[in-house]
Image (cartoon, rainbow, N blue to C red):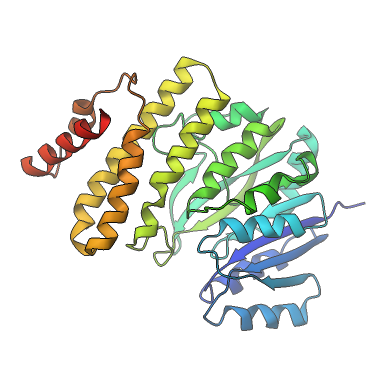
Length: 335
């Protein structure tokens, strides 16, 4: 008997891509699936498109919740409402190859995995921008949850494995309140899903990698690409990410890797902010500066990573004034 899979898609104002995403689900060679779309208070034509699909395909359902401002809560809401033990997560502007579900489930059953990660292709139009994993460093097909967690930050700025999009999760292997408690958190930033994904990996017994291909579409209109205060929420999620690593790993080498990544990301975002600062009003700048301050205060004072080395890393393309300002800012807030 074929095991049931619930596909969860969080959606907000996705009229441009949601049809192609749903079509890729309908074209699956694996047929025992149901699709649950959680609409995060869309204001465009998304609901009309969802309604059309739901009327012609009984496997497709959608619910609407009050807007939360991120994909994290609607994604978790869908997982909680899924009746099957297997749940597959897809974003509203992405799509999957036709034998995706078949490959992912076979991998899960073969390795008795709690989580299965796909091969992710980052695309723009018909062009493949990059692949994750990138195949430059061979990875084990199966590993413990903590081993998988290490791959999310020991590669410098990026993750060696997909963290949120495209995952196949055996929700029965997690505590019943595991997802509910996360939904009930008081604060949910745009990037909170990365922190929660890390927590999922750490608490999993086995994580496996599949050859199934997930196509991640680079959407320039998404919150993560549009100039906004929300795009700086990553500063706060990085603090939670770092804290979770410290609470889960006592090894100094691992913690040092996390410190390096945290500082690299912080420097990267500070430079980005210097470039964008004039586009924000006084109130917005104050809010962003407050987030930077929290990040600086979270720096490990014992971290063996100098500010000078960080500045030299990004010296190209910046004038002396900006570099000096950046150096002073970092030194001031590390005390």
